Amino acid sequence: MRTKEQRIAKYTKKNKELNQAHLKQQIKNKKKSVVREQELEQIVNGIVGFTILRGHYMIYAKQVNKLMGNYHSDILNNEVTILQNVWHSRGLDLDVMDVINPAVGYIVKGGGPPPVCGQFDVSKFDIDVFCP
Image (cartoon, rainbow, N blue to C red):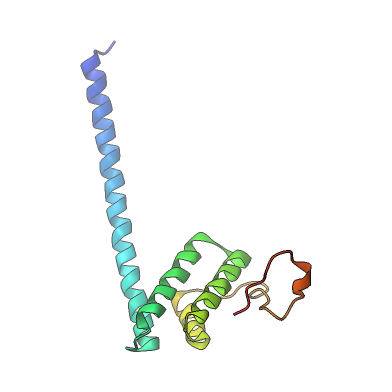
């Protein structure tokens, strides 16, 4: 049977190796995210140019990129449509956002985006429907 010191040494060594592997993975993921952010910035600069709204389009592109990692198919389509409506109400152009979407990697799949306000009967809902 091992002594208490031997068990502690083995446990400490094992945890140290696991922590180092975890830290290496975190560093690798951080480098990937920095590279992806630089790619997004180049995409947005190429599409929008240097306008005062460039920062807002950059935030929109980052949010679409984040949604692509979290959702798939119809839910992704719904979330991106909601995001477009939010940023359109803040003053961004829908045509520019439609150009940014495929450049970022988002392509509408399936049945397309959900219906926009005015294309369905809102009397069926118990809640208020947001119409920009």
